[in-house]
Length: 309
Ligand code: CP
Image (tube, rainbow, N blue to C red; front, side, top):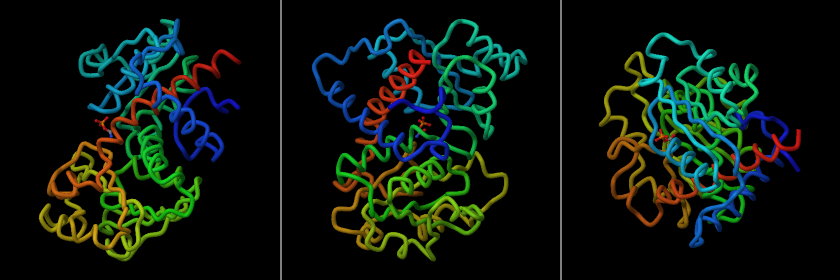
C-alpha cells in the first residue's frame, strides 16, 4: 500500500485504510524509539524543512526530532525571523524552499487552506501542521495512536470532545479521523463555540457535558483559543470552567477506564483541573511521546511514495 497523495493535508481527504496504515507504521516506529539506538536510515539523503507562521512547541519539535532520528537534513524557517518580515509572500517563500530540492515541507499557517494552496504549487510534499481553524492531521493521528495503544482500536468507542470546537482544527481532524475508524464522537461546548453543521462530519452534539461524557471511553478537552476570538463568546473563564471544565465530577460520568486527552498547550483551571491533568486517567504525556513516532511514520510514508512515483 502507498499513500494516495504526495501531501498530508487533512484527515477529511484520507481513507480509513490510509489512516490505519499510518497508525500501524507509527506503532512500529514506537519500538524504534524505545530501543537504545533511535537512529534509522529511513530518510537518509532526504531534506525536511519546517515552515511555521504560528508558534509551536510540540509539533515543530517532534517533527524535527523525527526527521533527525531518521537521518534527514533538517532546517527550520520561522516567519518571525525570515524574509516574510521583509514582505515576501507565502508562495514565494515556499517556492524558495522548494527550489533548494527540499523533499518535505512541514507547514503551519493561520489561514485555513494555506497548505492546500502551496501543495499544488511546489514539487515538495506538504504536511499540514495546522491551518487556521481547518485541520491539524498529525495531532489527530497521534491522538488516535494513543487511544489505539491502550484500547486496541477505536471501533464503537464513545469519544467526548469538549470545549471550543469552533476554533479547533484538532477537533475537526479528530472528528473526521475517529468517525472513519468507527468511534462515536460526541461534542459539548458553549453554543457560541460550536460550528454550525459539524454533525455532517459524522458526530453528535450533546445537550451538555454530562450527556457527552456519560459512559465515555475517551474525553478530549480542547484548548480555549483566545487568540482566535474577535468577540467575547462566553461570559468569563470561571463560568467556562464551571460548565465545560473537565474535573473529577466530569470523570465520574465516564467509564472507569476513561482516557483523558488534551492536545496542548493546556490552560490549567480553564479546560481541565490540575488534578485531572495529573491523574492516572490522563494520557497527555503519552500523546506527546506518541507524537514523535507518528511523525516518523508520516515522514517515512511520504518519502516512500516520493521514491515510487
Ligand atoms: N498540539 C499542538 O499543536 O501543540 P503546539 O502548538 O505546541 O505545536
